[in-house]
Image 1 (cartoon, rainbow, N blue to C red):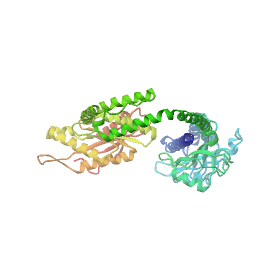
Image 2: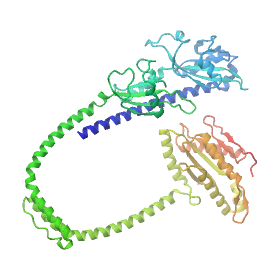
Image 3: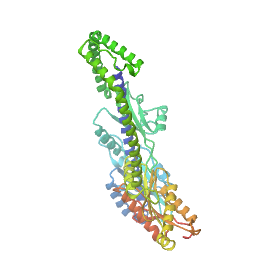
Image 4: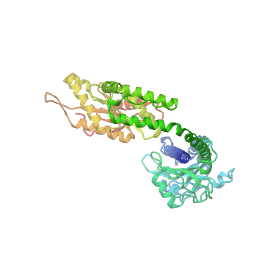
Length: 555
């Protein structure tokens, strides 16, 4: 019964964890897709090539918008409205000449990018025609303000993203599960159905929604929707939180499976376990009753004699008598007599072997740790060497790509280091390298990787960091080194500066070396721009972009 109960509970936990993971996968895909669409509209609104066409050449603008829609068929409509709300150009000419001044997406997007929650089509309903399934068209609005080169508001670029892509995402995930009893529902932040049966109806009450929004992800076996009739569900949930600069709409995803169907296999197994267990208990009782009389008395005598030996010390170690009875009992008695004679010698030998083994183990452990430390660190600075850094960096890249969190690389190089060696000698150069290494290590977090790649070149890998935070770290290092002079053993002062290049791990990077190469390119740009500065590698344009320029000339 205990095994059946534990098996049922464990199965419910595993199924719940799977439902929570499925809900989290759906929210991740929702946020990722919405981020891509949000970014695409922002890129189009800011395209330099379109600036001459927003107000003057609407025909060329319409052709461009049509091509964008053909490339991304999830957009049901893309249009540009001037600042008065008049639609100047739109895909397939729909709504051109009409006013959208009172639409939320237009009014809100004049000041900043806008993302609106799901709604039914109004102006576009009659132009798009009826759907094959008879349902009305439903859209998510995305809109960006369009400005001239001088920053003047020209109008708003808006797009209606068809809701069908969410249904396709759900179908793909459910097909991967291979279980038709699993359901995925998408609710808005008020608990109303966006995807699933009874669109628009309230599925969860406010007191049910609040704990889901607070915990963001988890599993509940007591969560029932308003239209569940008697059946109980194992429900995993997750809440969309946005991605990068896309703010997210707080959609709640429920992935659930009926308890009766989910636990039916384990319930059947539990019944089988109980039946088999009962049969074995009956057999064991019968056998035990029969054997007890033959086994208990001789064993009791042996136990009593053994207890006396234990109380009598080493002198009685060979006095255990031979006990009659079954062949097995006699054999046990003889074996114990022999064991008692050998136990003293064996204990002494064992103690000696254990002592030698512990000494050897401690020595080998110490040697191994020392060899590992030497193999992984740079002898001069104590930082990671190139080989150890690349091994650890590869693990961090794999972790970042699986779980997210961002990853950035910084490549640093001491400015005019050759002149330091030529003027002050190699000993001073070594002192400078050690000082820079200590500064880089001290400024980084414990989770970050800091390595010396050779000469005066250093590489830092920042975990769970974006490009702005990485630039701030690089600037702290640059400013700290430039502000304090290095005091040499002979009392002279040496002013050092450093140039740094930063790059973020991109999806297209094959490995961390690609990220380091782009950071190295940014370093080269910093050197070319005058040294003593930080440069960032762009994510789209191959030319690095400056981030922080020193306020004073290089010492």
